[in-house]
Image (cartoon, rainbow, N blue to C red):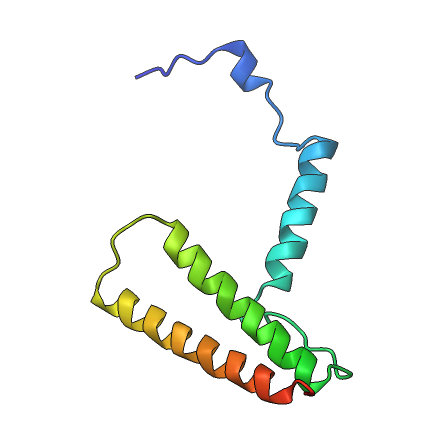
Length: 102
C-alpha cells in the first residue's frame, strides 16, 4: 500500500521559528519557577506585625470576594472552606483593631 503525501509536507522542517523558541523559553522559565519545591510567594523579613495582619486581612477579603463572584452554587465542602476563611478574616480584623493605637 502506497501512502500519498503532498510535496509541501515532505519539505516541512522540524525547526522552530525564533519567536516559537522565545515563547518556549519563557514558558519553561515560568513553569520551572512554579515547580512544587519553589515557594508560592516570599515574605518580606522586614514586615511589621501590623502590616502582616493588614495583608492577611486583604488576602482573606480577596478570597471571599473571589468565591462570591463565581456565581456558582457552592457545595458543602466549598461552603465549609468559605466559612473557615470568613472566620479567619474576622479574627484577623479583630487583631488589627486591637493593634491600632487608641
